[in-house]
Amino acid sequence: MPSILLNPAGVCIYCGATDQKLTLEHVIPAAFSGHIRLPEASCCVCQRLINASIEGSYINRVVGPHRARLRLKSRSNSIRRRVSYPVTFILGDGSEVERYVDIADYPPLFSRVSFDVPSYIQQIWQAGSVVFSSAHTETVEFPRTLVKLKNRYEPEAVQVKIRAYFEQEKLIRLLYKVAVGLFFDFHPQGVMDFRLGSKVISEYSRIFNSEDLWIAEDVFSLPFSYESTEQTASYAEVFETQDHGNRVIYASFRFVPRIFPVTYFVRIPSPLNGAYKKVTYGRKRKQFFRSEPW
Image (cartoon, rainbow, N blue to C red; front, top):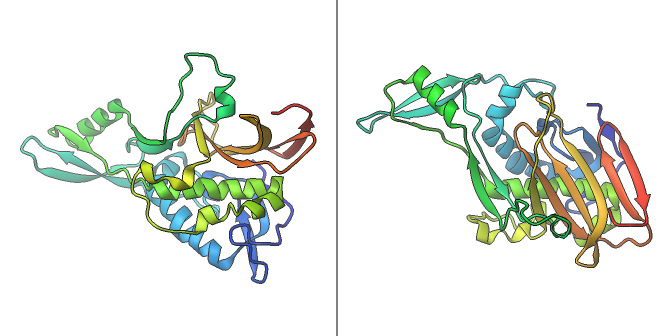
């Protein structure tokens, strides 16, 4: 998908610095096939923090195997070279054997955080719809793949154990990181006034469980089903709507659907008046206005 180059920000969208060298920011990480680029949008300090402590750690440890299987290119236009990953097989006597299995055989197992459905959607859904209530982590696995793995690499095993790295806090900060870039393109002054970037870089203490997800009070999600097996690109849009009678802005985006079949939402109050605005980021950036909420 061709890249979308937005207008230069001229300010660090995370900390507000203007007196430092500002670098180009991929709104959705390039490792997730993100194609939206915002020039002059992050200072060196924030860039190092986000790349090393949030993006790099989460992407390499959590989604590395899936990226390798899909042969997704990195920012440097290279494909992850690692072709095998460790799997632990537990034998009948309780002993454990570790084998490195080919990436083609590695189970598509991942964990993800699900949140409440956006309230503006709850208002229009029919009774009986599936709704994720409260923030929680779920692990998705495919039993047939695990059986195939056991039969091929360790037939005498009674159980297969895979270490699924998952860093809940870093995912949430990553969601806010994406939202900051989208909101800035939609309404720059609103992002700076609400200091949304501080949710990415400030108060950087470890969060241990879902009850401590103070940072995620305006994050929501919906399960997403894709039809095409070739659908690997990320997608985003930002729009204004009414939420319990209040005018709000939602950033809606998804990462590589074949890895994360979830659409995430981040919400902030809208300071705008007049027509309701919507911006989509598909192959091109498109902007729309109408008199009714989106």
